[in-house]
Length: 516
Image 1 (tube, one colour):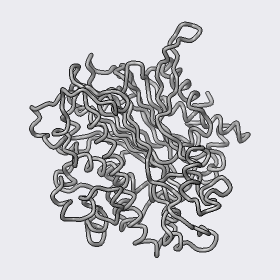
Image 2 (cartoon, rainbow, N blue to C red; image 1 turned 90 degrees about the vertical axis):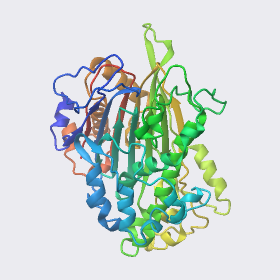
Image 3 (cartoon, one colour; image 1 turned 60 degrees about the vertical axis):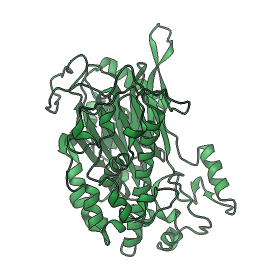
Image 4 (cartoon, helix red, strand yellow; image 1 turned 45 degrees about the vertical axis):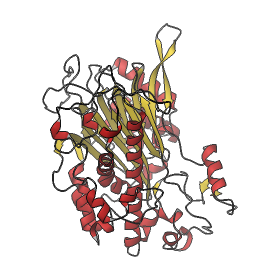
């Protein structure tokens, strides 16, 4: 009963949220006692996941409030997004989106936030001036505009987690922002990035580019999503995702997949430009902002396509059944990492970093980028990207010999995988999980747990095992480790956030939790 004692210690789960799909092709999910389903109408299920399980454990002590952007993110935007106790319905605003609110809070409105200085190679032409933005679709015309979505989210230490679901459109958006040197960057992402993704997705006139009968070309990413346009949804004419629903005879072209990935990348580029622009405005009063950053992991499940974007060392690991059976004749689960790890330990990343800075004899010092950072790609962390931001730091905090910035890249790894009948679940987690478990171990643990506990919480189960292993490594009992105050506990494990997405239409319920 060690796991039960862990839950009753000072590290007890204090807030939790859970989600299970309302609709299935073969009927509604059966719900065991003790689990809540958000009430909703019966709809045809178009997504390829059945339920969501998530958990987060904090180790860092960090300020819960952020004052960036005149305090608007911490005071107005995040409270409207966070739902720490359960998924809740949130209607899309028909008039003023969160990004509009945020941009109006800064000087010069759109010119400071939505049109902050950006690289022409990173962003399209209409991102660089207000006049062209005004003729593009407005931010409040996001792809889920005019309907209700289910949202949940919260914070654990410097980590932030978000989940947004629309069963009607077969859409699941999950994000883990693993902050470091403070939570400001993770808070900024939590307050803006989802809306940015929705905005950029609407800039593409996908319906005019997609030919429902065209065979996919050879550049298609991980398979082909089958779909057909639904002309009867005239009230959602601007909704590109809503116009693609599953159909057995039609296949989606790679242009749609490219458009989704391009939307993710452009949204991230815009967020990066906006954040660093804000840092430059506020660094005189808060020079610490120049060192604040975050890893980014986004998972977008739309129909049978699983899109991923990552910066840093968080991972998305797919569990799929191997074609080879085990000794007992049963199908065996294997782990497939869908994301790349952007660290100096990755030889490809190390080689890239060295080749990009031929005039710098020491881009890597003591196993870190300029002796400061383990990850080679990250959001924020401006002092490793711009000389003027590095100059804002004093003494030993400043990077010496910043010869050829930027040293940390904001170019994400992008991928799309088509869900097949062999795919069982996806583990989405910050790097703290993989400090203690390999990909294969996490898949084996979750796979065995799901079999023996069909209505349990696999993400919480993973964290319970992580704490047991961390306690064993530290020579503590479970209770002793969990009673170590936040901040001091960082010596023994990192902030850890885990989301487990059960694929397919299995009839099971699950609960998601955030431990703070």
